[in-house]
Image (cartoon, rainbow, N blue to C red; front, side):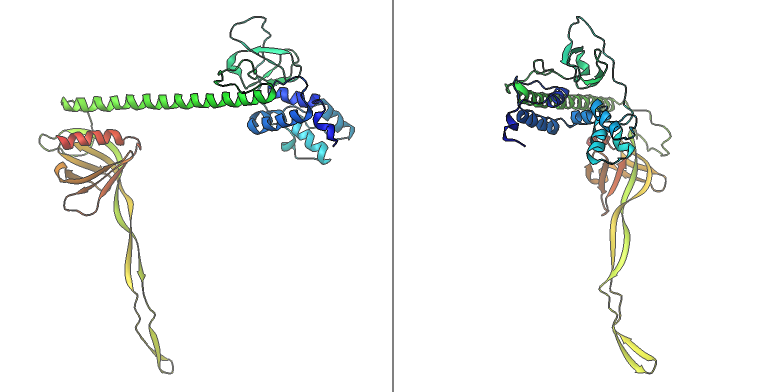
Length: 359
């Protein structure tokens, strides 16, 4: 490569690829500048690079393959043709051809319309007008009929930049990155706003249920399979699975084979042999599936294999989680835990239980 290569004017192929990325550049851009800009574009916008490589093979590529007597598969991509030409060998059909593409929208050629954006076609360079919602999508050019990427021009960003980032192709890349950064920040702010609104509405729902309980209004829970005591009312029912601490395995540790003494031919005597100490391992295991019932007097679990009923006054400690309730009963060492079928209902169960305990 000659020393003057870097100062030579950029090639039409370089300009065509820059145009595909949606770049604009200063007049007199050199090969070195175009090469550096393309490296940045490929690094920062891999999805556009993938679209460039998976576009249909260029006409000169097809002609070169025909000259070599190669069979040209249908839907041959630019990348597949390039690999065939560089390696001189056949590549697999899956590597050489693109998957069946989703048909891009065909754009009309409007003469005048408001709120339309404009960008040059990646192939014929004729300006195309399109609605803003098609930014960064592929479409069929109404002038040359080829598929092109619709991009936001340097002079008309969808999200205005808050700082100056320079001119030319490198300025375009910086502005594009700034635009992406601002768009992601806007999306994150919108996501947080939606989550906060959802949390506010859920808290209003919980507050409404607690307010009804204070006014003596309860939900109509049926077919619970429990017998209520005098004056007892069901405040809330939450389906779940009862978990308890159980022994899950046992083993001996510290055992010894002892010492063997030969007494006579074929007869021996073993002393000091023992199995060691029995060690048990415990774990939290599911015991029964059923309903956790909170009343104004008791905490009840009605399950298919095990049930319990504990007076609220006997609950010593409780730990409320988003997906479970763990508690200990007065006079018993082992805690109990109920995991809810709906792993996001811990807030309503906690609210109703706190109301019951305070009453």
